Amino acid sequence: MYSKIKLGVDNFDDILGGGLYEGGSMALLGSPGTGKTTLGMQFIYNGIVKYNEAGLIITFEEFPQKLYRDALSFGWDLRRLEEENKLRVVFTTPEIFIKDLKRGGLITKLVSEIKLRRVLIDTVSNFNQLSGDTVELRKLYNKVLHSLEKDNITTILTGEVEEVIGNTRMLNAGLSYVVDVVVLLRYVEVEGEMRRAVLVLKTRGSKHDETIREYQITSKGFLIKDKFEKIEGILSGNTRKIISERMDKFYVHKGK
Amino acid sequence: MDIGETLLRKQIDENLLKFIKEHICSFTKLDIIRFFGLNPSSRVDAETLSEITNNKTSDIEIALKQLVKSHILEEVKVENKTLFELSRNKDTLDYVKRFISCYGNPSTRLLIIGYMLNKCVEKK
Image (cartoon, rainbow over all chains, first blue to last red; front, side, top):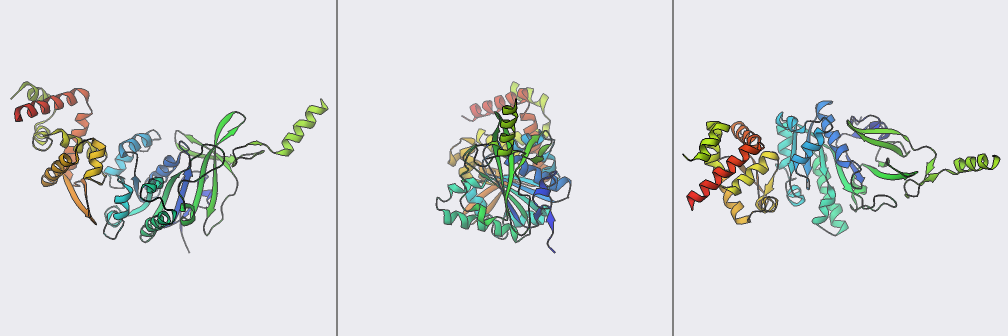
């Protein structure tokens, strides 16, 4: 029996089919501001406070001090958790991180020091600095994931998507193939309003919710809402009411 | 004792002043300790620190060597790279944390900078 670990975010575990397999990996893809880092931090924070599982945040761009500040606005005191030895927020470079994955490196050290269980890597798009070759990048992603799987550590990797709305082009070639779960976060324009949509594209070895759900980032973090009703074209960015709705309106209008 | 030191003594305790005198005696070290104090689990090499703090790599390397010698930082070898991280020693963590907290106070920060400038002039 393979156990699943929960993100602890209401409804999000349900759309993933009950959570992530222990030791598995999830790519969170989205354009800037869609909340990739927030959801990642929530996964780490909930792991510590709800499930007693120590966490590690690897950040390549943002200094930890900024993450502490941002997390605190949701009421998540990461600095305190770090002082209590339940968390490490490590600023490093992709090159050093990859080298540090060998046995006896950072991960092994943290498994023994704080009983590390969850990792957030923010963001794998920085691996593009290491190689422009997609095959080489895919090898790097595999190296990272295998090193973490060895210790049964569950990982979320954030990745950037270029377009804010419309057709999506991933900047992280190959990532979607090597991870177990792929989640896409994106903006959608509905009747002159910017809203946010979440879609699970893939879950390896388990069923998931295939609907496109709306989500909000509230003062307490992610809030997954119902599926977008009566709207189509969300992924293409060309949203419109579904045809039955348009027909209904048309006939009501004509009838008048 | 100059006026700057006298004023600083009013804001911070003797032990912390000693820590500043002995270990944060240059602006390069100040930048390094501030970085590790604000980002205590970070693990970086000299080049990255040089980019982050906008100091010359050669100056950073000298300062890092001294901070490792005084057990404030630890040196970690990863393949051909030398990385630096804040010592997990409880006393060191406490001093660095208290220093960052004092440095966050604008009036204390000015006194620390003034004190260090005086020391630089004295050295010259």
